[in-house]
Image (cartoon, rainbow, N blue to C red; front, side):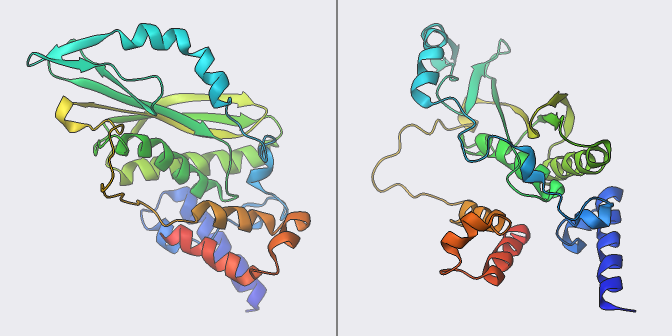
Length: 268
């Protein structure tokens, strides 16, 4: 058997693992190969994000003005538990904290979505789910009761691309949720000029089960949940297909190093 034939068969096997939901698929799979899924070799998921290179979020000063009236109404609301005021937290932080009418419990909830950062659809789904959950974890919440998925299917995708890519993104999102001990029970999928993936994470907890990250002091320990430089590695990998950008960094890093680092990110 030729080397090319062997690689093609391995890629096809990896593609089949992705689609069958094998729990060991991530450990066995190779990076996404468009050809193994009968797509053009030039297919790149990140090309379905026209806003790349520009911020996809409203500038902070503009956002502040837009939500100013909401902040005024919201900050005046609070509830009581054990004779202690429980403030409602929402505007300005990634998570909202809402005291429930069922005494002593709070609804902690977050939503987020963004555009493709990597070209592997399955990994993009996992990254999106982890990104949503991270907002809960930043509040000290360790358990997520439920997740919803938000998905924008690009109008620029062909039917073939849609039928291959979207299920992989959804499976990656679902698998990441399962790893976190939660599940996806619903959401919303829409047609959109750009491909977008994100969701909503919700948990019910007592006031002592979350921490508002607004009172750090000198001497506190900062715990990193992932290696520094992840975004740099992702950007460098994308620039391999963009000569005008790759030329800026090729004298300080080799293509081999870039590909090895991005592979290490998948393993981590």
